[in-house]
Image (cartoon, rainbow, N blue to C red; front, side, top):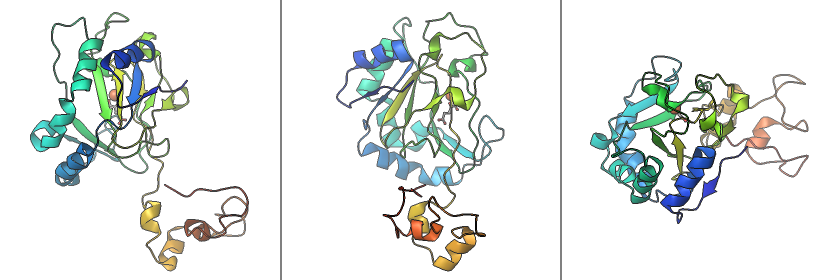
Length: 254
Ligand SMILES: O=C(O)CCC(=O)C(=O)O
Ligand SMILES: [Fe+2]
């Protein structure tokens, strides 16, 4: 079970074909520099957005809406010709299509995985006939999506499953993708936001801190058998890239 990736030179027909089979597909690095503009334009709004009010929205997650008004660059993503053509092809049974909502989602450290769901349940849980596409969603990666930092979890092919099913994280796979890539998925696909298990201080920030502070933060062995990395290596040495050749490769890259 994996998520198909298509190159940015792909066609709407290929995206729609992948959606028919898997219910989801990633187009790699389609956004180009627009993603930086969107990030810059939305940064002040994201900062003042409160955390979610419930576990579905995510109590460690910020959801900034109204992107059409708040970010001119986001309009380019919404109006991307390939995206629109793919959506129209996927939703061919409808006379017209309309934008449902826009959101910048920032899943914070320690956020657990979101309940696996279908986005078309937004329509009051109306039981649409199997195979009838009502939504074509796009999730643009503002940062790399990794299994560790909360990449969206999907069940490829699940658009054909029975409605109102419950799934666990273990039934899903992460839609990993690089920044600027976009995940398309149909409204019937079972999916959910991933748990963000990355550290609250990313490694690139940690590397700028003093050893004493890092040791206090946990980059230290707590006791003989507590807190070492792989072959009894000191966590601070691993962060600093020392002893890198010893034992198997450990990565502290979150
Ligand atoms: O955050 C994500 O990756 C997905 C969020 C989602 O599926 C939703 O809020 O409906
Ligand atoms: Fe969703």
